[in-house]
Length: 260
Image (cartoon, rainbow, N blue to C red):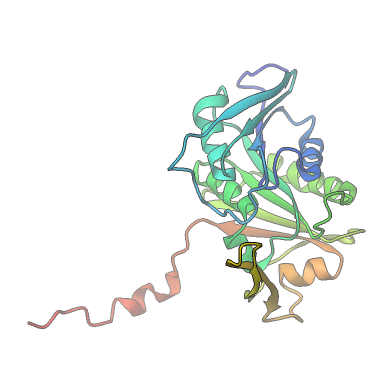
């Protein structure tokens, strides 16, 4: 394939870094659908959300260049990767963007912290049909075969159907066998942070972030958390517009007059 208007261009990125097993699985997931450009961080950038690099230069290096597969390493965040790809690397705006496959789930409010979804949302902001993929397994050598199998089906639908403006997909896979695919909503819940207090060899104090996720609705079968805990892949349509539209009219009734 050549870089023509007729050949789809697919931008692939992640937050676990270029050497992560998950991004290799993602390339396999989209293989055959077009000309693939991989632009990914040179190291782990987990938890970077939508962050960008503004204080230091961003360096990028071409790692591989062959027919239908072009790979670049970026010394920046996942969103940096997308921005550089769109502005400096790709021959034109890509037809699709995929991010992942993340080592670890990005369900519920994790979507707010996730570098995987940060890159996905950046694609969405630029009008590109975009999807983030994650596997509920933090093992660096995790088995991505089921995620590739079911993810390829989801991506095929994305290619055929497209997405409305301002919406992207947050896709999560359970560890092990996948029973099927469920379209659902983001679960209500939050991370309960804890900080492990430690002392370095010089007597200085430092803290290591730990904690756990508290699911506020563990029995709701409509959520992404329930889906992956019960062996299903979850597909959540995620929107960029964070406006609480239901409250607009109510807020207009508040008193905003400033008294002298």
